[in-house]
Length: 154
Length: 295
Image 1 (cartoon, rainbow over the protein chains, first blue to last red):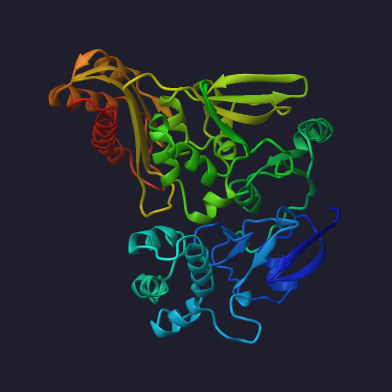
Image 2: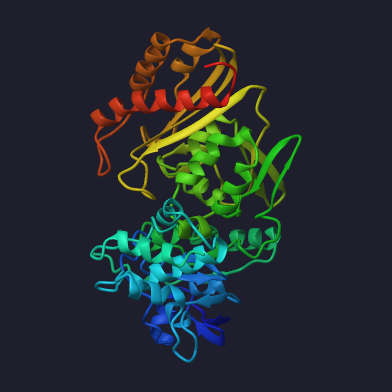
């Protein structure tokens, strides 16, 4: 198994790596970059906890080989707030709506919301539910999460 | 227990820039090579040790493989086109409604961004949602090889559970859907436990309608046998007939009898037989309405 060179922009920062081909994007982010906001849930593409944005589109980092996103622009939950710590309006909305309980699904949910609102600034409740159907929450309940995303609509 | 957090399998990763280069890699590594596109099937298969390749050949750098275009000959979808893009292409015309329904239901946003239509077909799952619509819409696939290519009907391409008529030196390059006849309507529905889940049962219908007469009809079901099935008995029952509730009920009974379901982790044989008749009627109605004329 030969290591290969790759580069990515992670939360705006250019990064270079030599990775083993069986390295998953999730583990590169968590282990090499110590960006542990990206969560390991099921590892089989069912829960959405490992969602990150690749070139603005949500993907499952637990099923993505790091080498497959060579050259891509990656956004993780750590890159959502401004560098000075000012929260993104979506994060503020999750706090205001109490759309967080244990917090494990939250990074994925926030990134899903970000991808949706970038394309559709005022999504309907149905559109929100359709968009987050692949992200499982087992404690807060979806109601407040949907409310939080809806409150960000224009 | 498999540790799904990591990939334990060790392999080399190749990113050929052309089909010719990909064929060279496949020739060099033979059975030790596995082609990968979006990875939504291949990576879980690697995690569960269902496959054990020493070389992964990624098709993502090969230009042209994800192109989508439509002309008078029909709709051509590159094998590496993302499910998301294939869905958008099918939304443009009424001719591909069944495939559009199927792609809308296939999975979560993330999987639609990652997975490819060619990958869904090459995995050849008995529950693959794209297969029943392609069966009723006369879909064909193009398989390229080092010296040329050949075209196969979907029906001849899927040969069994997770088995396709594809040689080790072939790569799927395109999926083709011919333009349907006039007054065609098609539809697809599936039963699954929750949204974005694998089908317990799926059904697609394409029909040609002349006022209250069903000129012709194609019916296919997924997750009801070792491979997605056409139900030709029911198709013949309806072809050329004036439609009424009795005839539709007869066809539904024929669909229910014509499938060969098993009981598995997702559903039971009894349930699948019962729900097949119900879902078929709903899908037929949707296709019938879409075909226009008076209902």
